[in-house]
Each structure stands twice: as structure tokens, then as C-alpha cells.
Length: 433
Image 1 (cartoon, rainbow, N blue to C red):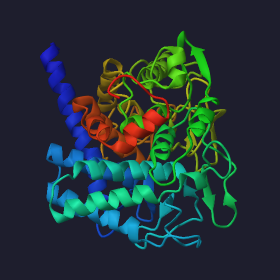
Image 2 (image 1 turned 30 degrees about the vertical axis):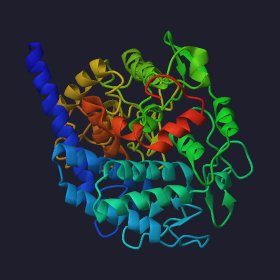
Image 3 (image 1 turned 60 degrees about the vertical axis):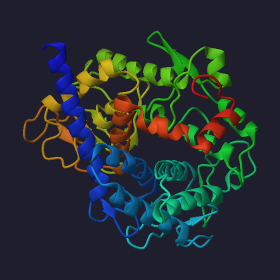
């Protein structure tokens, strides 16, 4: 295949995957309040992180012709009005408290379900989408003015100092029944966006020492000859990058190591391929064009494991490479979301996933996860296939494909004062800053 034909094939495949992933936010939604289902199952509650990804995706949809600007404005206003007006207080059936929101909400009423936690990181992902909407809808008409007013008000309401619970780093969350969770956002993880937004708050900002405390918990490793700040699940190296362009900007930690978080994610992407090539546990299917170990559903039942032929297979689990846990379950979305970091190794993976029919019968593109070590009843090479699509998987696909193709969301977010201010307060410098 010549270069022009190869490019055409890549563009057609990316366009198709992006559109199908975006469609999740149009169809798995309650238009009246803007809530987005966590999963495409009838009883699924809403995920506030999925809402943040949807708010970020609507501008992409407008630019790509997937929806009209009027339709995007209507959906965005409904969403922001809901979060501003929803019950907000310490009651156990509220929607949020102290400017933060419960991880999962009833799709119709918008109230807390499953006695879930008030989630700090999921609120950060929601607010990133809120701020993206405020930056994109910049017209002078009343509807877009209202979007900007509500976006600013929602951001200002979050009490980040309260979320520290007296410590240096930020708590994972809070429950009205028992108070703050015992876990904190420390060690390299998906919470970069949380600290950036918290540091920049004009009302209840995190102190700069909170970011320094977080950096002090990082682990720098050398694996397969690659050096990076390590996290096993691939999504950790991706989520904050959906909104923040880390190319050429460095905080104190990255200055010390002579790199940046974009390059770090590139190394993490290559590390996944290295691991799949080595395939130390002998899983079926792993090779240079078949990888993507991250948090995902698996063949087991919920959090219980399944044993087949002496191997254990798990349900939903934060899988990681190369130190595990790993049970042979791969996630196409995790590979696709690495596209901006290493397109030269990701594009062949996408073509491989297409060739083994991971999109067959799926309304939103590739399956969320699959496990070729477990033989499929229909004999397909992909083996076991997850029955669900998940909102927090679909969003990064659509948005990181766009960042790869046009830098669209990265350029948009550079104009958001909270992003630039938060990065500077965290000690970032260089590049576009």
C-alpha cells in the first residue's frame, strides 16, 4: 500500500471511530438535564465524568458537523442549569455539596445513587468540560452568555480547601454517612487536572504546597530501558491530557528529569507495546499491534474472578502493565486515546482492531474491552467481548482523535484562564505558557 492510500485509510478509520464514539453522547443522554449514562444499559445511572467529556465533545461535534451549534447550545445550557440548580447540600440524597458532585446520579432525578462518594476527581473532569463549554460558546447572544455565566459560577463554587480535609493533598472524596474517604490523590495518577483547577480557583484555591506534596509521592522508574514517572493503567497517562497540552511545559519534577508529561505519556504508550511484544504471561493475541492494558471490564463477574484452565480472569479492574494486574484483557479505547503521543504505533493497532472485527455489532465503535485468551463462542479471533460501552471510554476516543488531527481542544483550553493560571501556580513554565 502506498503512502497516500495508507493515509486515506487512516483518515477514514479515524473519522468513523470518532463519529461513532461521539454518538454515545447524543444517544445515551437525558436531553432535559444533560446527564450522560455511565453505560449503555437501561438501568445505568449518569456519570458526572462522562458529562464533563460530553460538554467537551459538543464543540468538537459542531466543528466536525456532527451536530449544529444551536443543538450544542441547547444541550449545554440544559446541563449547566441542571448542575447549578440541583439540590446542593449535606443531605444524603442531594446532587452535590461544597461545589463537588456525586460520582453517579439518577438519570432522571439527578440525585445521588448507590450511596456513592462525592468525587473530587470526577468533579474535576466535569468542571474541565464546563470550562471548555464556557470557552467555546463565545457569542454575544443571551444563550451563549448564559453558558459563560454558569460555567464561571460552577467553577467558583468548588471548595478545594475543604476537599483537603486538613491535609496537604486532596481527598478522593466524601460521603455524608462517614465523612471523607481515607484515600488521597497522591502518586502519579489522573488527578493532574484536579490540582491544576484547584490551584487556579478564584474563590477557594489549593495552596501551592499541595501540588509540591503531590509531586513528592511520584515514582520514577526505568523499565525495558525506558525512563518515566510510572503508572500501570494506560488511562492515567491520558485523562488530564484530554484538556491540557503538556508539550514543552514542565513542572519542577519534569525539570529535574529533563522531560515533560507529553513525552512521559509517549514512553508509557511504547511501554505497553514493549510489554505486549514480550508477553511474559503468554496471553493469546498480544503483539506489537495488539495492546491496551488499563482500567476496564473483564470476563469475570463484577469484582469476582473467574478461573479457566488455571488462569484467573477478573471483572472490572484497574489493570496495568508491566507489573499487573493483567489477565489478558485489552481495551481498544486505551490504545486509541494514545494517538497524539505515538501515532506511528497506534494507527497500526487501530487497523488490527478493525481487522479482528472488534466493531462488529457495536453502535459506538470498537468494543470497550476484549480477551482473546478466552475463546469466543462464535469463533472470532477477539475472544471474549465486553457487552457494554462506557461513557468515560467514549469521550477520550473522540477528543484525543481530535487533538491528534487538529489540536482543537488543546488550543481551546489554552484560552481558559483557570488552565494557564493553575499550571503556572503548579510551577509549570516553557512552551505555550
